[in-house]
Image (cartoon, rainbow, N blue to C red):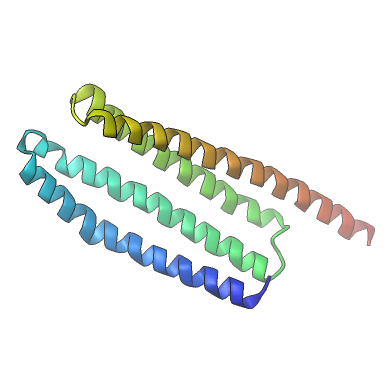
Length: 159
């Protein structure tokens, strides 16, 4: 892979990662505090929902680390190796956990707290469909990686 592309992708990952850290440390807590003041009837949800938001962003950061490792393997032309598979699994699990957290939070808000309205329902459906779709795409990509790794090792044996 071209070194410029790898450097560009790494720069994007660093920028996105810094944005995630800023979101976890500053933006999410400040927004939660503002919303708790604006809607005192649900202020008791400030801490648990902030925690869920921080955990969802942590899942994204974990996926970024896995993508960084896979990108390193691609740059070294070692992507078709067994050691790449756990990193793809990490991405799949991070996507599934963040999907469960997102959908669970929306369901809690809609069905137990009876708040949120149609916007939260749409967000829940989007999180469910988007999260599952991404996870399934990654499972397919994992299958392709496993097949390519197997074919590469068979080819190495022949040569």
